[in-house]
Length: 110
Image (cartoon, rainbow, N blue to C red; front, side, top):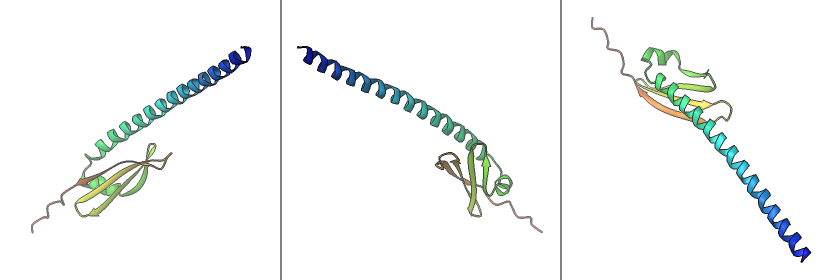
């Protein structure tokens, strides 16, 4: 009878420890996801601002450069098309990418 009680306590203790470990891991995962979401929202807000830049502004920012905690890359694959992306410098994961159309400036008539 005493042996059965001890086995039951060991099983109960093991199950309790597993439940506590799982709860702690879940809390950690929730905090990590919340931080990633905040970072993504901030990146999205910054890219919203970039999407308002003029053609001249985009031309000045061609290539890669640090923008806060992100690496921003601006490419111009066509004369009227710009591709911008933000990469998290800590994880090297591309967070957002968008394409922007900017018409060519009108040509002056002689």
